[in-house]
Length: 274
Length: 106
Image (cartoon, rainbow over all chains, first blue to last red):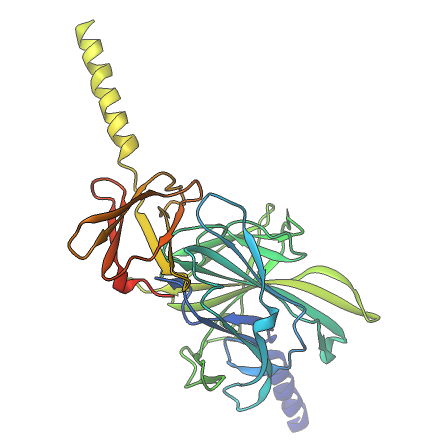
């Protein structure tokens, strides 16, 4: 009887372990900039709500920015791989993993308009799943208030295209986007949402402090919403800070003789009304 | 007939005013190219072009030293003036922006 209870207890523990959601982060402190200039970004593969479990990144496949100022002209693409350098990133659990930072000179983010940063990491081998994950990650910065190409799809295999300016969201607002694959909407797919629940130390290359929120239940750590038949989804924005939106399993294919899923990630920033 | 004409006139007036009083904000930015030239770009917060907007460069005493226009790409480049200067985006009443040369960096 006692043994049965122990087994039941253990089973409950296992069942209550949340499904850990991997999010490729592409982080900079501010996405709505008054003016351009030198800029620093951190590329970290982690669990943003917990601020731990830093996964080793391999050398980046692609890292670029597509910039457009106003309605005139086409988006101009600039390769940024030359600005990457490998770093070690430390999580709240003190465990560390390989990550990257990018220190961009002033000439890259100088003109007004939108800068759509795109990161294509080397596929990550997840031992537990015996397969690879590759997350096409976007983060959008604006300089000077002049909009540009924030709503333009880039034709990535897995992509979230914003329907709101991703750098201009008030706390309490709603954010809407479209899940796309190679420029076509992906209907009825699950979208995951996580709050970056920890502070970031850009100098020490680490998450710091205590988590800002304690989730009452694992389901609140990684929230889920289903996209509709047109691939559109909406989420509420209850707290200021950075929110990661991920769409798992947009594309399933093979890589090195194993299954690989290509996923979409978009980071948006939320600001309190003063 | 007269009454109908008056209503049409008033309506047309409202429409014209509504058309010009749009919610966009003028935006203007300049930086020093570090090669003896200054680059400026303009536009509006709704993404619309500022092509053709006059750009005036003034010296410390307010004298106009250059009168330019934003290009079809809403930008302009000019030789950096000696001494103190300022650059004005002359977008009309309520749409002027002045940037002092001391705030124009590389």
